[in-house]
Length: 197
Image 1: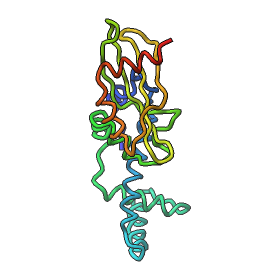
Image 2 (image 1 turned 45 degrees about the vertical axis):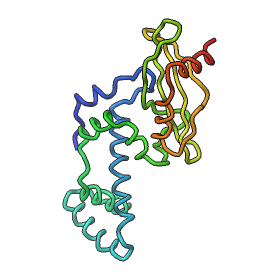
Image 3 (image 1 turned 180 degrees about the vertical axis):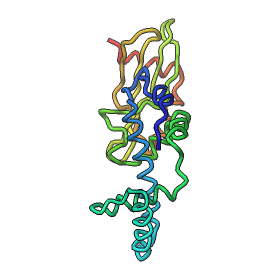
Image 4 (image 1 turned 135 degrees about the vertical axis):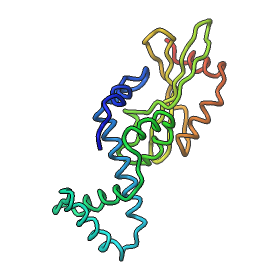
């Protein structure tokens, strides 16, 4: 697998309201995505078929210089990744840009899920408040198996940001986004007013 420099440069730009995702972080997330799907496939294999599958995996990995004698599970996972029609890094990046919530939820409740210290920005929209244009962005994270969210506001053309408390609590990140989309400009203005100094 080769990392496309152009895609990495495009994707690693810091979004207005989110932490920088370096090329290394993005590639790590892609590798974690591949492992998750390989693990899901392996959980579907009957226990009595694992030994036979591992034999095939060991033969495949040895032929490619990938066999890890100290970690048989790593060999099996690499082989499962090879069996699955997983997208290339370039395709994964494009899909991630188009469908960020699917990728956030795909992580499930793992160490790589958005956490309170590193929430994921999933959507933003402009609205008018007191004759000026503001941007409201929705940020989500996993907390105790459920999805929480908060709003972050910034005036267009300015860098100062204001954010609400955790005002959303839903079963899915999509549920949080659905609630956010129900807010009209007046509701967003009320939340902004509550956080302005």
